[in-house]
Structures are given as structure tokens and as C-alpha cells.
Length: 342
Image 1 (cartoon, rainbow, N blue to C red):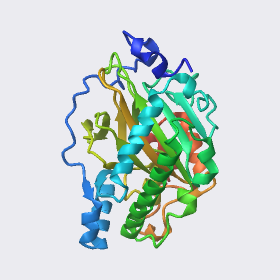
Image 2 (image 1 turned 120 degrees about the vertical axis):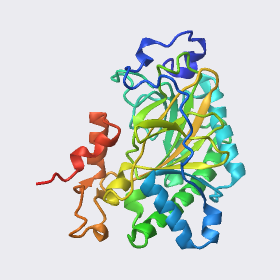
Image 3 (image 1 turned 30 degrees about the vertical axis):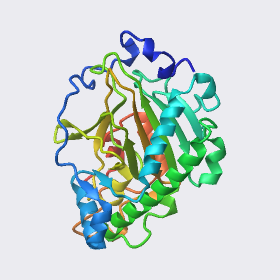
């Protein structure tokens, strides 16, 4: 466990060389402007004006940005706050209380680790520790989750169930907006759900390090909860823009599979996590993923003579293998799956 940042970073006076990113990808001056045009959807208010209104708001956000913030979303505010608290309590515990879930085996269904799954082979380490575990169906995995803090399992179970319900509601709005028919995003496309908590300790050189590099999500859709410390950035129109933390909001981020299924009507945005030199930052990610054998392809209802398929059909495990082996985590991850013009 000595690799964990929480084990040694507080004593670091300078940034170790193996955490220094190449010049072209390091953040440099991290004081970028906030994105003032990022869509903000009040889901309760949108639905109050009719389902069609909510569909249009969500669809436009997914088409124009691929990322938006949602408030009044139906996940209990006290639960949102308490889940962030219990996650921070977990990371604040001494190593001996976390040793049961620490693992360097990426196949473990619940594991605490540092940087990425491939720590030993990566050229540059990420300035983050991560706790990640499967959470669907809950009762298949909850026995693997951290035993401490003692309330962790109860709180995170309630949170996971409510965020999963929110994800179903958002996906149905997207489904209706695209005209895919009811329940298009069924078990095959949403059957692997992950709870992930990122811990970013204060960093001695935030201009040289990254918590997460520029990437697009490989999944279907992500629901991200920030704490009150800023650190999430969006790459849009050739520049980096900050995403302001909003209490109890979720940042909804479309993954590559949404872009493929929509035949390019929806976009998967490039984003990253920066560090800071003063504060611990924590984020919680609820990730909706297809099952490995699920066939991913542009929805047939969207395909016609004037709108031919842009992507070939593939199993999700083929895409994910390519995504991890090539380590091309942004827009280039889809290149091998595009249908080339003849």
C-alpha cells in the first residue's frame, strides 16, 4: 500500500519525476475560465412543463455538449451529502483499515489502488487514488465493499440505487428524444454499473501533474458528483474550460457508446481532472456500462439512405480492449470502429 498517494504525498516537497506529464499534455496554468454556457437542467422544473420539454432540454445538451449538470434530480440531497462524507471518511482512514480492499489485480470487483489499473507499465502516474467496485445488482457485490467506515455499505447502497434510478430516467429521455423506442437502453447496454471514488491529495506542482488526463469515457453514460473543490475541466472548441462545482448537482457525461448508438447525433466530450496544491479533492463517479458481449452499433431506426451508419457493429469487450491497449483515450478511440468511405 506504500504506492498509494495517501501514504506519502503529504510529505512530498517536490513532484516525483514519474508524475510529471509531457509538455504537450500537462495542464500548465490551471486558471482557465469556467464554462458559462454549460447546460444546467432543473429536472423537476423541466418535467413540470411536460415530458416533451424535458426531452428537448436533455437532447439538446447531449447534442451540443455531451455533458451537462442536473439539479432537482430526485436523488435525496441528504444522501448525496452523506455519501460524499462517508467516501472522505474512507480515504481518511489509516492504511491498516483499508488493506482489505487494496489490490493491484484489475480483475477484482472491489479494489483500492493508485493511478490506473496498469501502474507498473504506465509511463506517467496519475495524481489520484481510486476506490472502485461493482454495484449492480447490489446484492451480488455488496459483501465485497469496504467494511469500514461501518456505515459505508448502507449509505453507498442507498446512493447507488437512487443514482441508478436517475440514470434510467435520463436514458429514457434520451431514448425518447432520438426516437429509439421504449426500453432501448435495456440490460445489455446498462448491465455493468460501477461506483468509483477519486481522491486527489494536494499536489506540490499542479502545473505538471494530472488527476486524470484528457479522455472521453468508454462507457454509455456517467453521473459524476463533485465536492466543493474545483478540478473538472472540459475541452471544447480547442480550449479548456472549468466546470464549476454546484452543491448536490450531478455532472452527466456521455460516453463513446452513446455516440455510436446515436450514429454521431450525440457527442462524447473530452475532459480531464486537474490537481491543486492546497486542498484534498474528492469526486464520485457512477458509471453505466454495457455487458462485455453486448453488440454495439448505430440504432437501426436512425439509419437510412441519407443517414448511413458511421460505425461498424462490435461487441463492447472488443472496444474496451482496444481502448485500454492503444491507450488512445479521447476521440481517436473510435477511429478503428468507423466505417471508412469507399
